[in-house]
Image 1: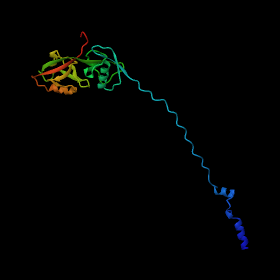
Image 2: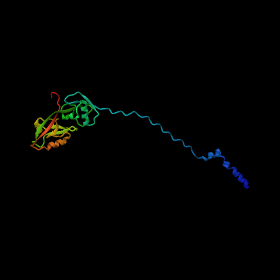
Image 3: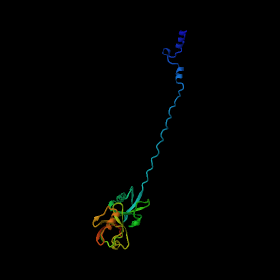
Image 4: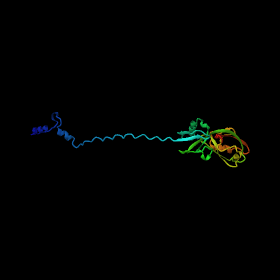
Length: 220
């Protein structure tokens, strides 16, 4: 009885004599496992869009205030670059330009170029003209001058108070560039620095101004 029971046990062993597992046995090993689907493929990247449109180039018209053909300038971001572009258009040195007015060739301080230029604005450049020296004696604390500068190193007279010391001289004019005080160059100084120097001049003591007039048109 014991021998017979061992024989039956051996016959039921599926790995007897090194035989492989039956297909049924292999299937039973993986029972309960699920097939994992492959990860979804990502869609191809969209085609590149059109290149961005370049910014339009802003072109401005300009003339020399005393008379010249019309020039076209562009690609400037500050006053010094503007003067360089104007000088290039008319084959002059940027140092020749005293200041610019908009839409008027006259020395009109109401039209003085400020920080903004409109697309329709016409730029007139006022360049160096005659140089003159004027002796001034302060008879009161204020000379009666309002000084401004062009942002590129030149201070000039923006306004003269009627009846003031400067007004009585009649040789000093609005638009004159103040180049030197008592032979001391003030080129490169800001307007408030020049105003301070003039204020510090002693009353009753004469001093000399070297002035540069804007160049006048023929016949003016």
